[in-house]
Length: 124
Image (tube, rainbow, N blue to C red):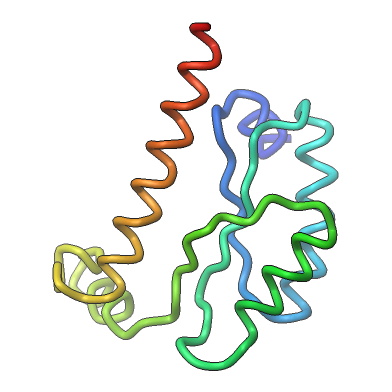
């Protein structure tokens, strides 16, 4: 119930999912929840993606074919996230020049842009 109410109140919902079969199968339930919430603007966020291989691209294809919007930013499984959390930081604090920090900043910029678009539409 809390997730449903959060989706109802949110301007945008990010649904994090790892790019493997078991995790991808759970996204359908999130889609059902979003429908109950009134179809809030939502993006599936590929998270903990391997830095090599085709799993991420296959996940994007699968999710798109299932009718989900997929966030254009993919967060990869990078050591900087792990090392940063060990000292109570995020990747950008731990190593601002890292790929992990760059990906996180790209996600932030995507969300801000999406929120600004929503606000413009509401005010039009």
